[in-house]
Every structure is written in structure tokens, then in C-alpha cells.
Length: 132
Image (cartoon, rainbow, N blue to C red):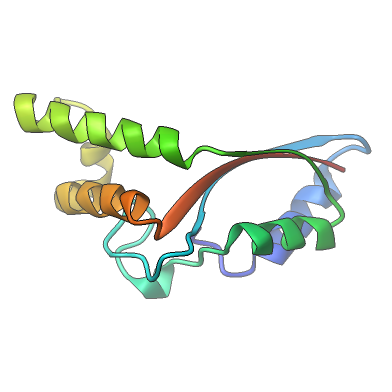
């Protein structure tokens, strides 16, 4: 998400894997419904976010030498999880430990934007397995 030169990243991953090695990715990707609302957990501004579409990710992995063997869209599961977490926080408040400690004072806005981005199709999530 925060890596501008994704082709170089995937080529390096391909280079270090043994022949027949497996790459597993769970990534946030650009959705079909417009620009991402910021801040989000991976970036506070558009300048530090480098999302690609699912088709672009497939192309990048192919160009790096990988063969995609499994692709699962996990968007609906992530959306459901974010909605349930938001409801729990609304009822109980923030727990002593959690993502908010790592992400800082912008956490609640980031979480709201993440949920909204998922609900509005601005982002999608994919779990991808590829072979060298």
C-alpha cells in the first residue's frame, strides 16, 4: 500500500524465493468507486498511498514472474469486521491496547474512513497466493 515501486518489490520477492516457493499477500487495493477518503491506517494523505487495482496487482505479479494460484476477495469479511469493531468501540470505548495505540490520535477518523471506504467500494481487499 505504501510502496510506490511495487514491481520492484515483487521482483525482489521473486528473486529471494526458492523455485516453487510461495508468496502470500493480504492487501488493500483500489476499488471501483472513487478516490479513497483519508486518513486511513496505511496513509494520512494521498501522497503516501500507492494502491493499485486488482487487475494491476495481477499484472504486477505476472511481470515479476509469479503465477497466481489463488485469489480471494475478502472485502465483505473486512467490512463486516470493521462494522462490528466500530459498534463495540461505540458501546465500550477504546480498549487499553489495540491499533489505536500504534496509529495515534487519528485512529478513530482512520477507522471511520476505512469502514466508509469499504462500504462505498473505494477499496477492496484481496488474499492472494502466487508461486515462483
